[in-house]
Amino acid sequence: MKKQKNINKYIHNLNEFAPGIILGIIVAILSHYGAKYLNQIIGYKSLISSILLGIVIGILIKNIFGVKDFFNKGLDFNVKRILRIGIVILGIRLSIFEIFSLGVSSLPIIVLCILSGLLAGYLLTKLLSLPNKLGILIAVGTSICGASAIVATAPGIQAKKEEIAYSITVITIFGIIAMLFYPFLSNFLELNEKSAGLFLGTSIHETAQVTGAGFIYDETFGTVNVGKNAVTVKLVRNLSMIIVIPLMTILYQKESSSQKNYINIRQISKLIPLFIIGFFFMSVLRTSGDFIVNNSTIITENNWQSFTKQLTTISKFMLVVAMSSVGLTTDIKSIKSLGLKPFLVGIMVASIVGICSLLSIIIIN
Image (cartoon, rainbow, N blue to C red; front, side, top):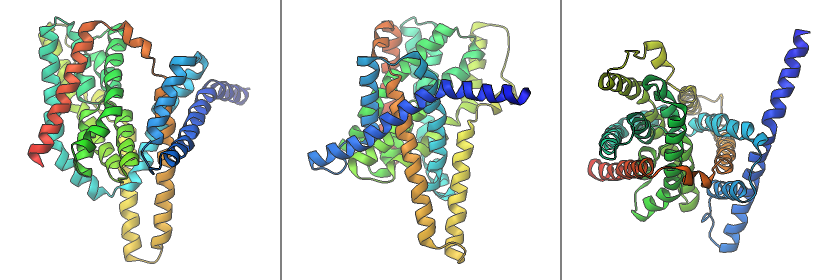
């Protein structure tokens, strides 16, 4: 009886998630072949990125035809789970030494961008008389990692559901704008692959948006390292949640003289996303594989390269599925529901973080 209940529950969950997952895959396939076809017509190998096209197609479908509610759970699964699995597999492209080198070199820029975002958010919140909780959520979301940072910060400052939804909407709008615009700005400014990855990884909000921007750059301008560099920098930036979110909670509680309910060590440990650990594990696998290939005959170089290439292809398609799903869940009408003040704080903090990132990269590098 219990086994039958488990089977029925599995079938029920599958029926709930399958429509959205399939829709995301269909749009991803259309964008993959559509980008190839359009690039052939234009006569330029990679002018139109499959990820960019997937986002655009998704947004058009959502806002012209609409997407029924029964697709939502599957699309949400694509954006959260499929994206993270794709990022984990992406770790196979980087050795652990490359991650360490890039992480150390990006750390000063990450710190400066986070500080500038938090300070700008605090000052603008006071200047425009925005509710403190809403201002904190927008500042944290813009400075660190978008919705994840907002959701993680909300309990510590006792934010309302409306404030959480409001701030997520604000940072999502500007994150999508940055995702579509910053790759072309990076190329216009003639940033090299490392600097472009640093800029995209430190200036765009969500991990999904950074991933999309990095691979839009690679596909559009024929590079191979910007996407993985941007994702690596973003994952290092995500780890700052361990310090920043408890700190913001403490500062808010001190300023508001509310009942002390500080985040404990167990809560802090939950701020480390598992996909970051998975990404590093895949990098260790890459490093180990490279060592074995160079020092023994157990694995041939051709077989190892073929294996890593296949995983990279799978990872990239999963990212296209995830970003297509981002488009399918982006409601342009939601902009109308935003008040002017949160909108101004969002765009100003996002702009300040972007400018700080560019100036830091120019000065430090």
